[in-house]
Image 1 (cartoon, rainbow, N blue to C red):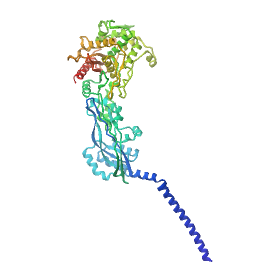
Image 2: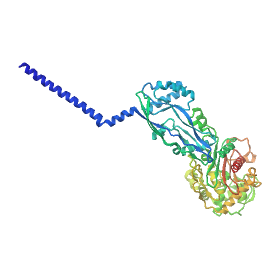
Image 3: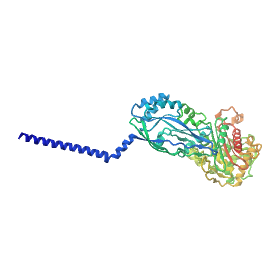
Image 4: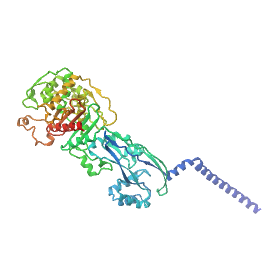
Length: 592
């Protein structure tokens, strides 16, 4: 009886245990089914992500050439040290590498912070432009340093710094740029920051490749699984002429600060665009040092500023052709109109002076341009009015971007009655029209705008778009009569080539190379009556920043124009410096 009872208890316990084992087995089988069948793809993908690393590859950047095929921005072979963050002894690893490569504490901390911030497997740049000795030292330590890589790549090189403001430079992408496009996070990749490097960045950059690598638990590469090559960036030929650019920059070099623009006056192709002082764009490629950056950023003559497109100056007498056109088109004057200049024009108790103290006597438009007679232009500006002058100025490209394509181009300023009322809250005065009539007062223009104006006069009245690459944009006819263009060209020719012309000292004597042009001086401070009486306004010992800007616009050859130039020399004191620079550049352009 007792045995039967014990058997029943044992059987019941065995049954319960069997059920428990069956449930456990079912749970295990079910879990295995879920892991291997239902979620197999997901977990295989996670396993592969630990085992397989997809590495982005930086494409080779396209090169920049001038119009004759001279290299302006090229690439050269360079070795870089990279490191991929691992979880084990990250800081110790970085410090070991830093000790081997003699990195500063600041550089070491930068790498450590980047490794903690960036995703795993994203390589971090340790050092670029490794020497052969440094490569050899790293190669010896690679077996002990998981995640350290030596990569052969390309580094940007600018062989000629005369094009620094036009070409610009490349540098590492910002964090924001890298977040928007993963390729830009590659430590070797460089993007355009200013100039044509920035304008053409996507064309020059190309597309990245992908390399699949199998890695072990220590993140060391076991083998390469797949390779998908990227596409190199495109090479681009610019309109810049390297020889003309170097000539323009060398002519500016003796001066403190200035800018030169040289255009093909029929197509608008930019042949030279120089700003002085310049800088070495190679300083930025691998990260500019703090000392170099402070030097450039705080340069007293603004070395980083491209004055040809961002410098806004009163155009002085180079603006007189616009005032003359406004008067001609509004029938205020004809080619026979004369004004008697006695050396000044009175308005109330104030005198508006002419450069020639005793006056020019009776002058027509041609002589007024030749002598740069201010009194003539005071008279006609007052008759035309500021709004009519502004309308012609805008038609000829002033007060707006020339659409050159270069970033940060300024628009200048063409004042009107409504502009002054809206911006300054005051009414326009007649004396301000006098000032605008000689390119002073509120009028502001950039050197590239002045070159576009000069090109339009030279080519017979077509406004060209200055461009640095690609096909020439179609020109815009300004609807100016041939007679009016001929009057302007006659005055500009006489200004350079006849005795008494303000640019006579800079005439080109070689047969067939004669140029036509117009001088200008731009006051930076008001000249008092006392200074005029004492005769101190032209003294060479004045402070540099108190001297007038020197300007010259010209085209050549005078009979069949091909080149149009504008020259601006800051605080040169007299336009003669700009005239001689323009002469040398236009002469060189015609013979090379």
